[in-house]
Image (tube, rainbow, N blue to C red; front, side):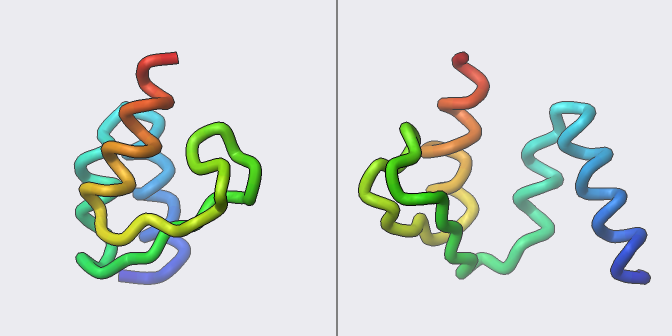
Length: 64
């Protein structure tokens, strides 16, 4: 798959609320960082793996 199309597909998945497909596209060992001071991870330490991203970021975003 062409890189540009892959990114478009990922944005489309998020737009549909399909976080599962979005996260499934990443390596199981993904390291995800947010800016230091973020309300989702104030110390700026990364999350490791799609489950950590789902539980610590997307679940929080979905509850707001």
